[in-house]
Length: 138
Image (cartoon, rainbow, N blue to C red; front, top):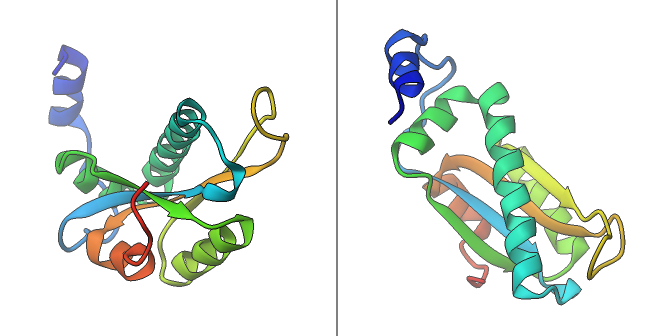
């Protein structure tokens, strides 16, 4: 841990909001219908993880702090297509889980604007498992 991080931990106010109860994780659902290469999938999942982390910092800082403290667990699973990812997003939002959509810029393998990933959380593993537990690991 760097000096700035150490000082921040000592001086920062505690995160606000409801503290999550139990282990936390982030789930990234990848649009399997796009037939992306491994490197493309890695890049899109990276975009999703960063975007979801930043969103969580402003909207649910207590969840972010807990997730960071627990080792930032991330799970990647397969989604069937755009409609499947949007349906998962809707169910997650109804459950109060933060969602983040990732659309590709279209510079390489797939058309511009393609929905590549939906990131869920970070949130409690139990809440996320109820939504994505049936999906196959990537």
